[in-house]
Length: 283
Image 1 (cartoon, one colour):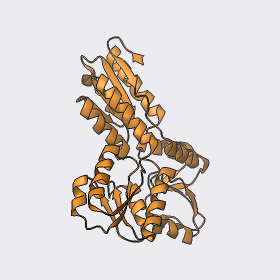
Image 2 (tube, rainbow, N blue to C red):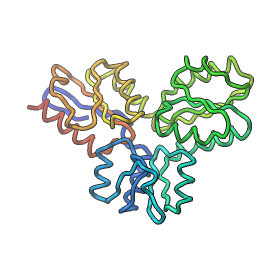
Image 3 (cartoon, rainbow, N blue to C red):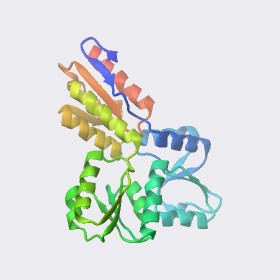
Image 4 (tube, rainbow, N blue to C red):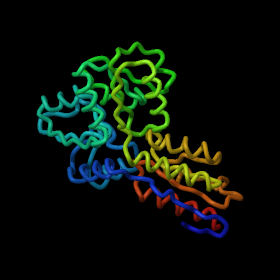
């Protein structure tokens, strides 16, 4: 708890860097002068730090990697065929894919080989889901809501996985819908523990706070989910990337400011936001 003259600042019980992100950053730092294929994590400020301090570049072009180059695979993973191509080109591949993302990839591969249609709950445009879907050798479908399930023509045997950062309640709705209409449904809970813990923590804090600050990259799926949960409990909830986005008017006549951060948000950014809020509210 941080206390200003008139307002308190409280961090959620669980927030910020998850295991997979910590692991990926450590891998990147250990591979100086390499390049990540795609953004390593969804936080531009941390990617800039890796470039500045460790000369870890960012390339979104597969053809930029040649024999002998070192390619660090992003935490969200990449499509199976792209990974194979990198190996074929004799690129030195350092896989920083989060193990929680590798798991649904493996499930899709195994279940489709056993004759199951694959249903993935997530955002089809998200790099994690593009990678996961690529491991299915048979039919694979992506839905973003329970309503979209009705539009599909699935076979009797269905295997279901979820994007690691989705809300468990929404996943349960999709599973319940499938159970009513299909003979055999194999359900795999691929939502990661850190996501669930962060979501529970922000929900509790947002019920007490009268202003909430959620910190994370604008492309971060898990941060968007946290902001959505905060808004449902506290209408004055703001989604920011850094202290540069903080506005003084958010804290007028507020008593408790709650803070949470996405799984790709480094502690140095969080501390910067806290310092900025303290400056504004103690002036």
